[in-house]
Every structure is written in C-alpha cells, then in structure tokens.
Length: 114
Length: 110
Image (cartoon, rainbow over all chains, first blue to last red; front, side):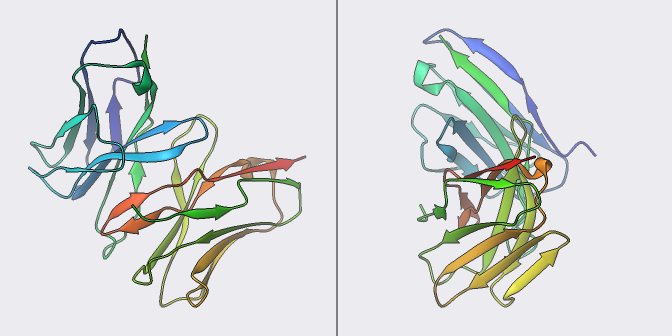
C-alpha cells in the first residue's frame, strides 16, 4: 500500500519546455487534487477531479492542464513552462467528506523553471 | 474559494507551554473542520478533525474546539515539544474542494 505517489520528485525545465507530473493513488479515492506551494503562500489549488474522466479548475489553473483517464491517476501538465511556475507541487487524494474527508498527500515534486 | 482566516501567522512558545491557533470561517453550511500539520520539507498530514455536531475533540496533547455561533475553531497543543514545530493549516472545504491559507508557523523553543 504505497498511498499517494508523485513522479518525478525533482525536475529542472527551461522556459517554454513542457512536462507532465504523474500522481498515482492506490486507496480507491474518488477525489484527487493538485496544489502548488510557494514560500509564504500556503497551498493553492490548481485543479481537482471528483472522479474518473472529470476535471475542474481550482484557484490558480492558468498555465496548467490535467487529465484523469483512470481513477487511480491524475496528471498535471505544463504546456509551456514559465519561471512563475517554479514551485513545489503536491498531489492529494481523498474520499468524500461524508465518508472521511482526510486528504492524503504525496511527497511533493519540486519544479524549477529557468 | 472559501475565505480562510487563521491567526496568528507565526507563534513562538517555550517548550512545555501551550499553543493555540484560531481559524475563522464565513460559510454557515460548513460541517467539517480539519487541522493539518506540515513539517519543514515534508507533506501536510491530518492531525485532528471535528464535525459540526461535536464541540470538542481531543487526541493526547492536541485538541480542537468549535464555536459555531462565532464561526471559528481552534487548535490547542498542550505541553509543546520541539517536534511540534511546523506549519499548521485549517483548510476550508467547498463541496470537497479544500482551500488552504498561508497557515500558522509554530516554533517551539527548547
């Protein structure tokens, strides 16, 4: 039982390059989320998904795309990376609040855009 | 998203003292109130949560109290230890979307 796994854990990109962050969970959670964390800014919700095949925008969705083709995976894509996207990215998953509501986070992915 | 107000933004206490962090919310429909702890360089983890039909919940040295009339809930840590040093968050939910503020940075001085 691995919980929530993010890959890669570290990545350095040049401005304009593209990349995909993969989040995988083995807890059969319906909900999955992508957050970014910058110093002094707390965690900000980028996109989220309430089930397989669904995605929705969070607080700061611009410059990112997501897909959830399988229930256990949630992909975050950067089509044209910008220095402002330098951040630590956390994926999380959960059951609905009516069940437990606890968010399980991955270890984070540190992205640097030069 | 939901308005998250957390106070104080930083808190420094001496080891063994108590620490209290307060979170206010605006949505009267809220019925789930969690607290997360994030140690430096680590992922956030749930430490305690409470539902609206309960006024207080304890787990060893930590407790959460809820005041629905005043629309705030608080995290209480007693007998603080250096390992309690971390950032604490009280995310607000909006139909299973969780919004985190900047948190409270707690420093426990040995």
